[in-house]
Length: 173
Image 1 (cartoon, helix red, strand yellow):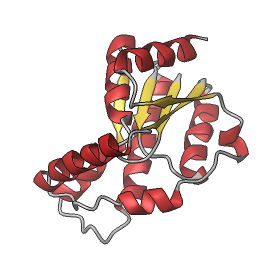
Image 2: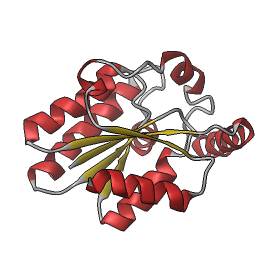
Image 3: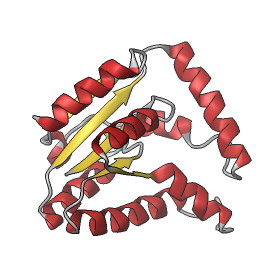
């Protein structure tokens, strides 16, 4: 099964993906980590780093899925083309697909996470602004083929344990 996370930067996707992945013994591929590696390799931040990272994640995920293993894609997936990329991959590999959308209803907590995230990304050599504003502006409603895929929305302002249980029940349904 292909499990694609979605939500704004700092919403809590990575934390939830890591816990769910550990519980299910499922590989988690982080688009952010791929972007950071691309930047560390010396590729200019002016290049289409985000697109490159999504394509690398897709290539790696395809290999995992073709070996009959599940995978979690940890990425913003803010727009239909990104979401549809995962739907097409699931179709090509004959895999099931589920989306887990993560929101954070606590604005102060969300801002705190963004500050921590920016500091970590700066240490790794990635731009501090990290395209958060762009993600907010671009985040589009669920429609088209990705809108037809099973999806759960979880609020990370709530207890992680509750969200892990809800995500697990959704994935097992």
